[in-house]
Image 1 (tube, rainbow, N blue to C red):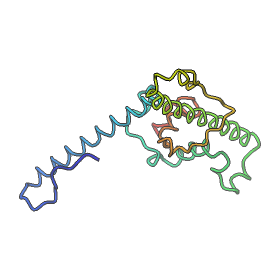
Image 2 (cartoon, one colour):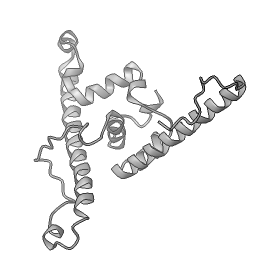
Image 3 (cartoon, rainbow, N blue to C red):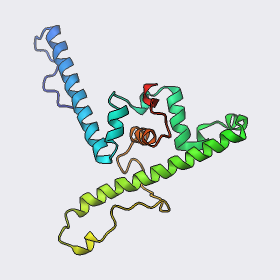
Image 4 (cartoon, rainbow, N blue to C red):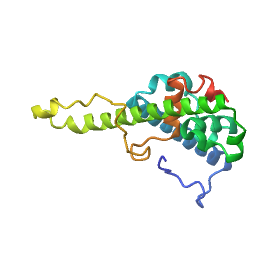
Length: 179
């Protein structure tokens, strides 16, 4: 949060309109700061193109409606998004589709986590330019057979990042953020 230079609840005699104007100005600066921070983050993670196409508006996983949240959770958790009663009512074809999409989503998340780890490794290893052995390390590569055990939280990722990743790879529709 931006530093609040003026305590709006102080005992200084300031008219209500000036307080409101200052409050609105602080809120606008805070929103601009958050927008710039988000753009830098998505540019760093390689999701900037998707963010510019679909994410210009202020979106957040917590503000998704029930249908959006369920579609996302279905990709992320597979059968875990359903109750046992709902799971029993699903057709065989629907179960196959859920399994297929869940496996594809998990592969994408694993590769994405590897790419983020590679970005961090490149940043760290850039300090050791003189060492020839470091230059031979395959920092750019990813491997589907390797399971990245880092959590999303450890890598600084959240569900908003995964939402854009799923849209970018067409697991979620391109109008998913529109509601």
